[in-house]
Image (cartoon, rainbow, N blue to C red):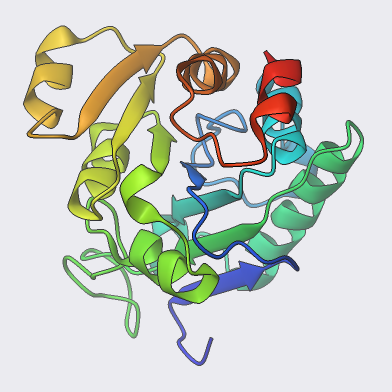
Length: 218
């Protein structure tokens, strides 16, 4: 993108009218080491890569949407982010998994210029990254789901009109009740692998013609 604070990476594939699984990155797919800047420090969360591979096998688009305030704060740049993403891609590929899109927001209200931007539309809990992926990939957002480790992740899903979201590594029922509203469902799970297992079992992301693949993934 021609924008100093935003990152978009889209893979090949026709995802028109499909529901997608949106994922936060740090704390969900990889261990949150606080401002990860070096690929050698990347550590996958146990079971995350295999869980993503299960979604791939079902034809469910997997999209990472990640706030990267470390860029606005000057702790690292997009080159370092790219290197970490390359390491993540390789770790996923080792078990036959892949991401269909990655979107990142480097803006933050306490960042350095030109990345100082309070409440940027792409920064979660705002829905900008999800909406941009939905437009670019022609996704069915109303049947899509998000998994995150912070309330802002799930709130972004609600603001984007998704059908629900899962908070991992949390059993805060008060937070769940606060985030759930109207048709938007909020669950909790111990990890991404548990969250994806529950979503697949519920059939929420099932697509016509993909039910046999879904059954095999359970």
